[in-house]
Length: 213
Ligand SMILES: C[S@@+](CC[C@H](N)C(=O)[O-])C[C@H]1O[C@@H](n2cnc3c(N)ncnc32)[C@H](O)[C@@H]1O
Image (spheres, helix red, strand yellow):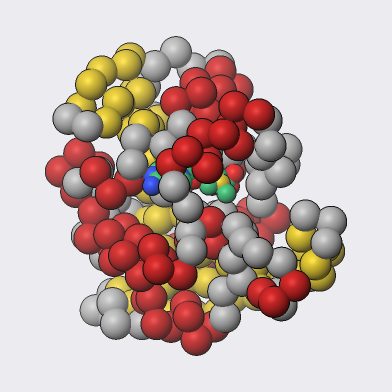
């Protein structure tokens, strides 16, 4: 997807992917990663997600990356936080003590800017990208988080019945993106009703742990 596609979605409020509640699979399974208070969670393609509020409530620090600045301003507004805003190379950095979000293309974001990361939380990020971008995206997130463990949520449905995003991701695709760097563990698969009111789908939670961990 081009940047313009996402900016248009945010400008027109066509953001059905934005959920009012915390993701139930995250609440149930993210603790498997056994993080400590003040550990850092990287949230790629974070939008305005409420899931960041849950991560902050657990006592984690969060670093996010998001293309659309209005979404990021909304995220900080929702949290009642007033960030310090600075230019950081090609990106804009919105920062408070516990939450930093880089505004711009995630592919412009490097490991030094992100800093030490203890886990990645990926909801509606991998699935938001077309096939030709996903391999590059997965490799980039692994690189800028220095192979930190990942908690990844995917959707699966009959791709022939609907064009993404969100795209349908099979377990073979997940293995293809992550198994070179991680042990891939399937946690749970649940029905999520009809995606966009059209197609029955399931949501799957995965955890990717480094092979040396
Ligand atoms: C489907 S939404 C999911 C947002 C969020 N993860 C959630 O669960 O609500 C995907 C988000 O990725 C952002 N995005 C798309 N391409 C991006 C890129 N190259 N760099 C940073 N953000 C991007 C879009 O602006 C959009 O907010």
